[in-house]
Length: 504
Image (cartoon, rainbow, N blue to C red; front, side, top):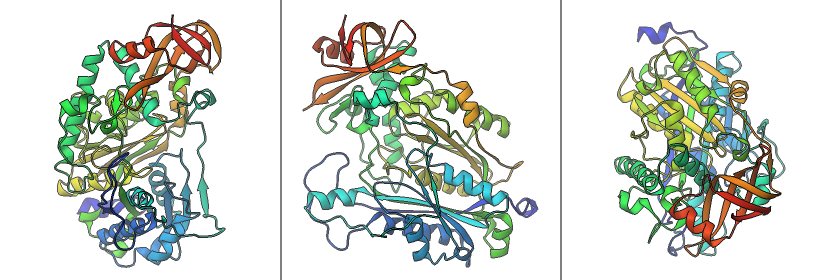
C-alpha cells in the first residue's frame, strides 16, 4: 500500500473496468432464421452506458463521475453523431468533453491520450467506452423490423480524431480486395511461404492455434461462442464452417455479430486518493505505445512481417527491462489467425503458445471497433486476482497497419512509457510502389482464393514486377485457383493482362 501512496499525484491509474453483453440468438456471419426480438431491443449506446456504469461502480468511489473531463468513443457499426455526449448525459457527467475516434485510429489511442493528458495535468479523470449491438441489428433486420438508433440531429463532438495515413492503397480498392479476410489470408499465405512449410502443414498450424483459443473460450464466462470446435473442424472448410478466403473459413474470422461493450475509467493518483478509490482497484499503465504511421499491405516490401509491431515490442521490452515472454497474462488482438501468428513472431512470443485469456475474437466475440476494451477488462481482472503480475494487450488497426501495445500492472514500477512511435515505425518499414495495371510476366508474392457457393471462383494475386514495383489484381484461371488451394502459388510466374492474370 505504501508504494501506491508514494507515486506522483499526476500518475495515471486505471481504476475501473466494465463490460456489458447480451446473448442474442443470431449466429455470426450467417445462420438460420431467428425469432423476432421480444421486449425492447438494445441499441449500442445502451450497452455503452451499461459498461461505463459498471466501470464506475468497479472503481468503488462516489463522485468519480463528476470528475470525468473526457468521454471518448471509437466509431462503430452505428451512426451516432456524438456518442460520447449520449453516454455522458445518461451518466450525469456534465463536465465531460466528448471525443469521437474515427475508423483507422487505433483503439488504443483514446487510452494512451487519456493517460498522457492526466499525466500532464490536463484531465482529472477520463472514460473510454465502445460498444456494438450487431447481433440485435441482424436479428431485427431478418425479422423485417426497424433497427432503433437515437437520432442526435446536427451535433458535433468536442473533438474528432481522424487517421493520419492510409489503410488501403487505391490499387487495392480498384482490385476489390477490401474485405479484411482477403487481406489477412494473403498475409498468412505469405508467412507460410516465408517459413518454408507446405499447404497441409500450414492448415494444421492454423487449426492447432485456433483450437487452443477455443479451449480458452470454453472457460471464459462471457465468451459469445464457447462451443467446442476441434482442430479437425477448424482445419478446413466444411459444414458449419463455410470457406471465405483460402486458407480461411468462417470460424477463422472474427465474429462481430455480438452485443458487447467495454469501458475503462482512468484518473490521476491524486484523484484516486481524494475520492477514496481502494488501492486494490488501482492498475498502472506501464507501457502505452502505438504507431499512427500506416502503410497498406501491398506497399509493404515484406508481406509476412509487421515492422511497426516490432518497434513497439522493442520499446516495451526496453522500458520494462524484461522480454515480453515474461509478461504473465496476454491478450493478442485476434481478428484472424494471421494477426496472432505475425504478432507472436514480432513480439518474440512462442509460436506454440496460446496468447489469450478470453478465447480470441472468433470465440469470445469480436465487436467491430472496441474488442481491446473487453480484453483490457479481462486482463485487469487477472491482475487484481494476482497482484504484482503484469498483463499485455495488443491492438490491430486496419490490415496489420497501425499497432498498439499496452502493459498493465498493479504495481507502478518506474513509471509509464506513453508514446506514439509512428516515426520509428515509418523508418523501420520498407515500401514499394504499387500498380493495378501492367502487361507482362510477374512473380507471385502472395495470394488468396475466394469462393462462390462454396466453390473456388476467383483469386486476388499480389505479384512482384521486374522493375521493383508490385502489382495487385485478380484471376479466374481454373489452374491458378486449383494450384493456390492445393500446392501454393507463391514464387510462380504469372502473365499479367492489365488488371488480371493467369499462370504463365
